[in-house]
Image 1 (cartoon, rainbow, N blue to C red):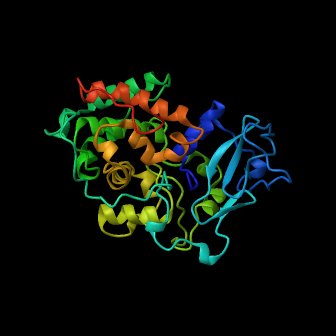
Image 2: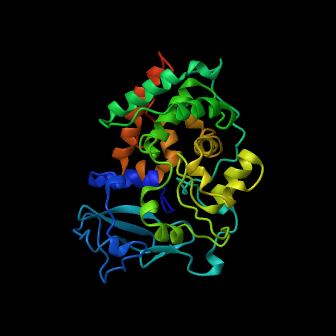
Length: 338
């Protein structure tokens, strides 16, 4: 990645150390503060002290986080920024991006956003057609349960509000064109949101001052913060603005970011919007290659970086969901690490 990762993407990174960020316990004495970079930058896997170490610059473009007394990869800095004292900052005004086209996407900034936001070109295989492709709340619940078991996790049963919003918005907000595509979307969202438990970055709820600084841009609306929210973990002002205009034709989400996490329907809508605008038009995704969807969402880390094990867990969930949504469909792994 070339930008600071979203929380759900952060979950995938911190899991490398064998724990969920949700269970991490930030130290009270560093709440809202940044640990200065050591004289000699630590390296991935080096020993750290969770009681005094938190986040440091590994180099000018990436950060490490202390987790269970080991330095693990946290994120790469956003395009145009450099790492200084544990923060990704703009070195000077001239380095600030001026438009969304020159910036990164919410989850995988290394790929330019797709120009196809209309959701056209949906493939006809995988159970296309019909009213929501026969996907009901019963199937949705079974799919979540199957995905959880596939990676030996314990995701809670979805609420009726979560299911109803998923089914209601998959076509209108997401442009989903088949049951196979719905399975691809759900597998990725379950991973990004820690089994639909995270509608807001875990670490940003614990370290709000740090996150506010690291997601700050000159375009921000005063009083608003732009860390990851919604099931896709939408980040940065320009993505909130793009999602708002795409969904509502105005800037309401950029002016009231909290609603993306607090309102169930909005949390799903921004996630479907991201899929429709940034993921589904990829030829590999249209061909049913699940790996291609991972590549669009977090390819820098999970397809070409150090977190390929996370991509394989996404695929394991997809293989469990697909028979529920699209019986008879054969899952295709291609498009990421293979």
